[in-house]
Length: 140
Picture 1 (cartoon, rainbow, N blue to C red):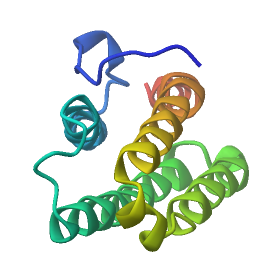
Picture 2: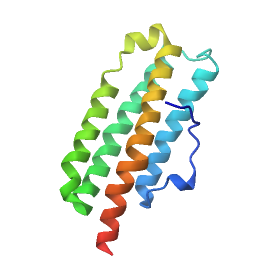
Picture 3: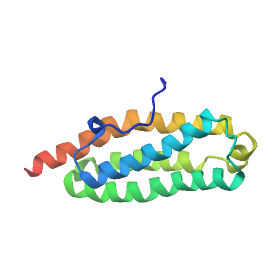
Picture 4: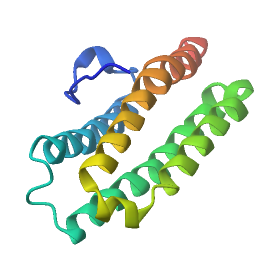
């Protein structure tokens, strides 16, 4: 996977303001990961690392819930497939080992960042756009 910066750009919008705002929150989390990696976790204590992991877990919980409600309404025939993808990502996020994160934060944060990048490119920029934009167009 190639590297990219978690800098939000209007071209990343899916066209639904509250979903775009939530996706921007993911980019904010990604920027925090980037900063810790760049500084080699010099100022990251245990409390901060665990808080960052909790922030990721909380994000996927509320964002996926909101997005799934919308997909059920806009594109119900694509709901199950989309929910399954969300469930797989939640399982991955929940499988992140706190002990490993605290023992080797630099390595673990790089893995988490790569996982988030993969999610952005494979899911947000492709699946979310397809499911949400097609649903909106069908309502017009």
